[in-house]
Image (cartoon, rainbow, N blue to C red; front, side):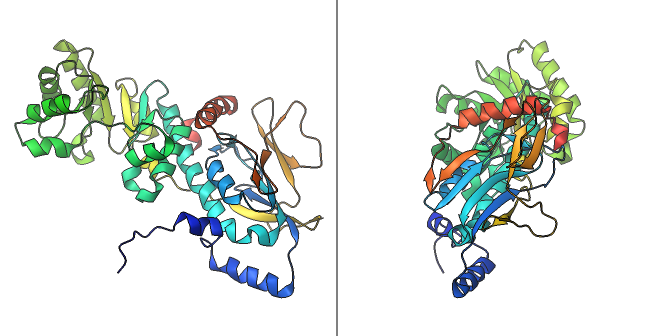
Length: 385
């Protein structure tokens, strides 16, 4: 028995070992036949524009996978919204990147799904603090991917400490029910005070107030127990929640009535856009978990569209090298690359790799800004997902 985790190591991904077995068989057959055609291949989810907007993520990792190979790659910028057509184009000898397809699609598909769900959560509560709390629901090796995609979608922060190390960002968080339980029923004040006295000064003083008794009772007790309490958090399990909006309003009313108007109310636990819309006028902030972290990956495919300069495509796919554009009215236009694009449209495909050399720099803040601006341009709403 090995003491290693069941994780495919980065070197296996880079080398092409993290592939479907039939690509090994493909390489063997091509090498046996002496075939290695020059191809154009495109990564696409939908052939035509659908109006179902998705937020592209994972481009930096995809670029690192393809760098060092004798290929040219163009792609949409990370943080661009799209609803059809290719998001990436690879040109080169097919055997140069054949084995990379499996990993490449995974590096794009999964974060794109997460980022799109994060964007929907952001738009459901545009004026609230929304944090990513969901990395506990996925394999720990995916933590940084989840939190980066959550930030790309516009969330204000995340909880995973190791992801923060990878991303160069500070993870945030306050207390779990376990802390309160460690002090025992009736001793919640001791837990809240211990937290206040122990954690760094810059950590927000937010008390979890639904462990043993009524949310209103614990919220008032926490506000009295901790000087300068920043907020209370309700993480009430669904089986005890009842009319959650009414509970939150009771908590807010009671805090205000007792002179604690400056204590914010945060909620978490099984929340998605529907709940955020229902609560955003009575809640100051949200922790969103599985709705973001467990988002379905987008079903990207990689298809050859030209072989040795000749048009080629399998049934059901559009042949020929394509370009994609953002039209002046916020639309997403797909057209053949050797034809003129729509009047006034902006071409979205940009160089990513040239003859194996990475030619694009990546900045997460720039990608976050791009996602926010493009979502406004296309009229994205949380109902698009």
